[in-house]
Image (cartoon, rainbow, N blue to C red; front, side, top):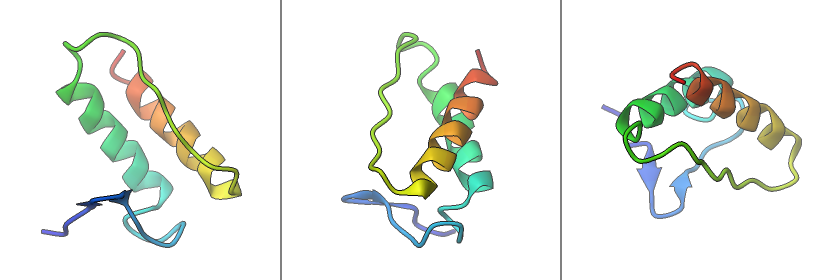
Length: 67
């Protein structure tokens, strides 16, 4: 099993596992399942790199897919 989370979150080159669009979507779905009873607000932090906009969209899609 691959360790994804470190002290600074998930770190890797953009568009390479584990920081590719498919992985971010899966992580968001897992977060949605795990925190579904915690309320319905989510704060997403990012920087200005182009890849962050793709990851943000994937993360939001994953969350919304579980309501």
